[in-house]
Length: 455
Image (cartoon, rainbow, N blue to C red; front, side, top):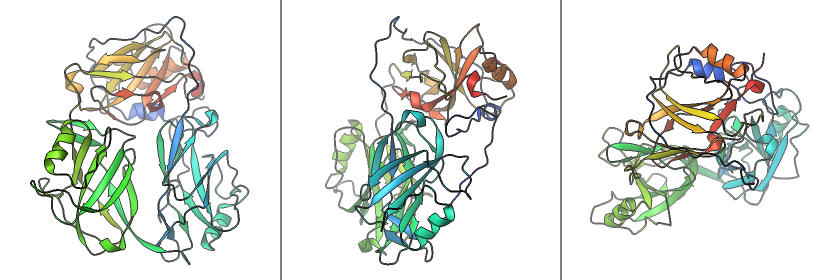
């Protein structure tokens, strides 16, 4: 099993808080490109003078537990037994891999549940760290105080199953974290596996739109290619949440060596079962916005569905989804900014804020559109037709004093404005496909103020 636990930190030096998150602000500015600003009208909701009290925000994270683990000696896969205690240990990025492990926090669950959801403690929110999972097969095993060598030895002798998260974990609301487990397969059922790769967008007419997160994906295997006048007759199904881009399942013995096609649906609302449906019923569900419908297509010919000959470890990909386009007659987009920077410094209410869409690399800050608003409330703006279905990086400038405009300025001048407390600077970690009616929630943003930037 391949593991990459990177300890090298890149980017500008920032003050450390808790798990020492990766603050790559300057490098990210140097690696983005921005286009010429084209201001457009947008409506904005002014904050109330006396904001009503709010219920405490509960942020959750979901741990995705596989059905199987890998025997490190034989490289075979084995079933993870049900009803065993599994403990997740949160460890600082600065931990020395040669030293004894000391966790910052633990979460506890039981195997047999593929998705385990936990509340994120306030001190962990927006922080970054490693997460290691331990399944107790025999006596209780505490990762704390053990070296990594001792942990690997316990996995090799069959005392535990050990599962690192597949990458660094950022503790944000609705985050889904995948784990890969290793252990001793002796005495445990061996299994074959199948993996699926999901796209992030679907087609509707001439546009592409984001597949919504937090929805259920169901994949169906069928022996015969679907006919326009027939019904769907599936022999197996596999499911996962839409936030996961790839996932593994046990491949039933009955499917080994068999030829199968694969269909998929994303359930957007209500409920829907593909089994037994004809194409008229499927088309109606798509047009009503109940589902997105997908097929694993031939990579050479997207007009043809691919027939897979199934074997242990096979990967199923090239799913193409179609669905109903969002209403674009009066397209709007809403931004919900966080209340604090990554350091915990409050973002003051009632301040002017500009949200910039950006593109490729340039030496100065350039933007092709600006969404204006005010901190302290949701910001709802018109979404220009030129941006519908387009991917953009998003950067946010909160004006603390003066009238700072980043457009045309070198990156050092932006950093100096943060240090001089003229602005707070925010960004979304990944490019965003801009769709009508979408809400970009607070957990998508990272904000930086003077307290976040080191000397």
